[in-house]
Length: 343
Image 1 (cartoon, one colour):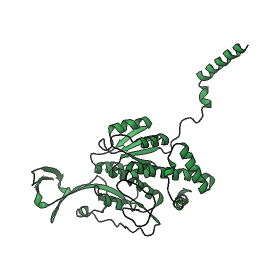
Image 2 (cartoon, one colour; image 1 turned 90 degrees about the vertical axis):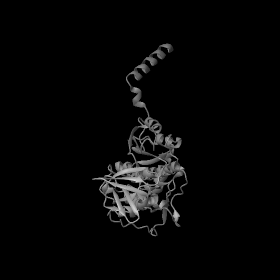
Image 3 (cartoon, helix red, strand yellow; image 1 turned 180 degrees about the horizontal axis):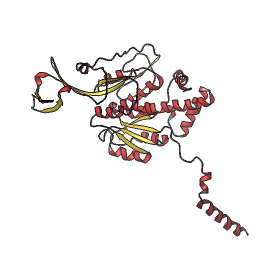
């Protein structure tokens, strides 16, 4: 009799599996995404700056990695986040095909780029529908870019080359100018007449993107007739600053979430301590944003901010997010929640 019942149970189990009934008792189902989109850049500042603008607009996060391989800690973050889409900002020299192939294991991968940082920036900005003021900057001048971004303006990269008129030969055609180096007879390039300006002691070449921009911050761009943007660098009204360097540009996102001034030099208390490791810094910023967003979501349900923060950290910790990196002061979290909890 016992053998009969065993055989009967096995037959039932086979039928149970065959008709897909196991799925009815499967716990969890498809793992949800913590955010829909993760944006990947290399560990250089240029593409990261524009990536933060894009990330904030689409409620994504930015993670930086080495150009030639996918950083293992970044890979762990992507596994935990489980995004629906991964956007690479930068060309194959900035973020290699090897990195792209590694990312394909974790979701749909899209690459947005151009031949230079000017075109990459242009292609990202064309995806945005922002009311913030766009300001032309020298896209190779870090401090200039950050000053513009720190005021919640959008820096629009331009390429600016300046030559001594005594060191270059200019050959003007009907619509273009060919420029050669006198010193080594090198051909520098051919440019539209509209993009070459000769003023006393300078020949300025401007590589401007195909974006409607009214203002600039750079003096050499200003020489082409763009009015200078009115940008303040007075941050005395804030308790904290975010001290930025070339290895912590991912923190620009915190400016947008928390309205905390960004600066490249400060004597005030610093919100977050960043080191020289751009990849690690981007993970820290990502953790800050994940905790902010999760806390907000829980707070909308229970109305208790302290409890919401603790629960948010616990939930993210259970998904292997390194919540120990979170270090936003409580009063800034409180201000963030008060601004957006009812939107």
